[in-house]
Amino acid sequence: MLDLLLPVRCVGCAARGALLCDACLVVAPAVRTPVPGPEGLPVCWSAALYEGAAREAILHYKERGRTALAVPLAQALAFTIVTAMPRGAFVVVPVPSARRAVRARGHDPVGRLAALAVRQLATLGRAVTLRTDLRQHRRVADQAGLSAAQRVANLESSLRVAQAGRAPLNGRSGAPVVLVDDVVTTGATLAEAARAVRAAGAVVNVAVTIAATRRKNQDSLR
Image 1 (tube, helix red, strand yellow):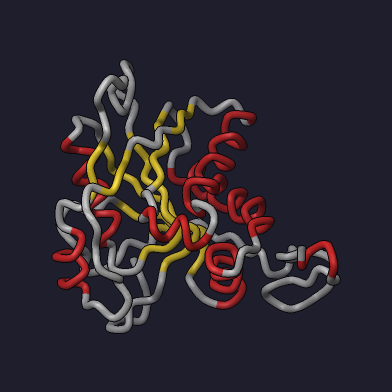
Image 2: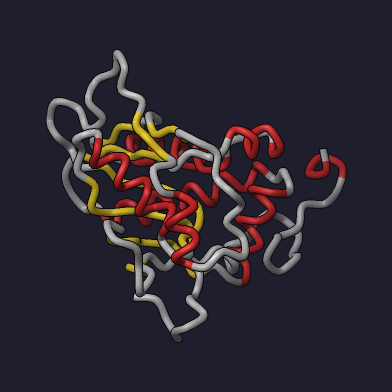
């Protein structure tokens, strides 16, 4: 409703015309794996650092109902996935949001981005499949304010792959899984997701996010 009633302004610079203008939509895919990271963490690619316009776009999309931002964010995600996986078939598996978070927000942010990105990749001729089999197995505490070690403990065995009556997660071809999330901080969530996917018999070596936070104890992310 706000987008219909008020002039559209960029969430990054407040310029009129688009929710995220070309000047602010700077996509720079790179490996930004948290160091140190939890055991089992895949190589983490991200489209940008979690700051500036990227941070504002994610916050407005996830927490403030600006779902139209899904389109440019999904484009950034798709481009980063292509950079991380330049050839071959693969399966995209989004990290699930807690059901209470989905109810509160009114949508599933990561699931929507993954679906849009897969659609874009398919139009480019990539052999990509979306699977939403990853599920929350139990409730976890809010991650905000927790240390890296506390996050790992909080998420331990919290995810699983729902396989009853379903085809294998990576299909008959054994295509690798690419995990997708919005932001990587300590890597605890992606490490737990990778554990669950591997427990289901699939291979996962890469995770892709929109953004990666800078670790407070280092100048940059690897």
